[in-house]
Image (tube, rainbow, N blue to C red; front, side):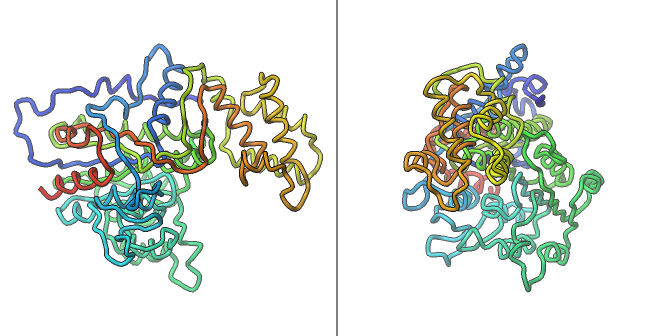
Length: 454
């Protein structure tokens, strides 16, 4: 798959800011960009892929080439590994809470205030953008206050009442929980929002269109069929939000996390690159307004415990995989249901799909064993304890191939969940220094709020 890399056209992030000009005391334009589940290793392996695929360009990810870098701690209020709700709340509100909680203190009652509301009260336009459902945990942490992140319908009620100017993401999950209630699409329309659900209507949006909700499923970047990629969501947000009072825009790359949970390295790389394309759009705008812009790129946590062991050639392996994990899981399930595919044949098909045809010896035997276990037609899980321990409830055939792919790329997944490893934070603009060094996720929220209110 050919991807667009903006590094060469944007050049170095080191530019002279504000030379000879009157400088504002606070940023007029703020981009807060969050790679969900994006640890330092996720950023590095995506850059390795870009560097190896396009060696003549010697590319760096845009987010890896900003002026200031730091490391950010992510644990929730009691010191546990965080989920996206607690981490999103810390990033949005500058305060810790418990896992599963959005916009409330750990007592599940006392509200916390998101900086997005401070920006709105300061006269700025506000945009919330994501590659996953608009009412998912990270975007919701900027506008909702609920004790459980799964309260999607209630989150949609907060969305409609927020009065923010631009929302863009995938289909609201609250639609499935609206039985006997006003549907989320009617909630937002009643609140004065224009609901956009197709590319033609999206392209027709113009500066001056007020209160817009874009609800459009993106799919996965690896499959190359994104009707509206995250970068376009971001670009359109800039067009709609730009005004004399400035804007605040949060942009989340949510499927970096989803592919981390699946231990799907190829999908993870492409989702990270898709997020970086959105960062490039933001930086391009910031460079047109160098005295007035702040760009902060961070993550809510790391997902998958990704370790990079060797700098191996990985392009051919990554490019062999054309689909996201669930495509192959459905394929194996179909083989199992039909009973027409033996383990050797299934292994041959899967090894080709994941670019691991050259496996030998114990490595091949391990994957073949997992494939055979996935094709059993028992109604209960009769797999060996070894297989269950290695792959949990995940499809052993697909997961074993994903792990073999990672190994061939010089990487290793150590978890199917979140980890407490520090994540990278990078920033660009006159105020960037305040986001460097080692900090806590609450520090990012506190520092941004101070700038907004200054």
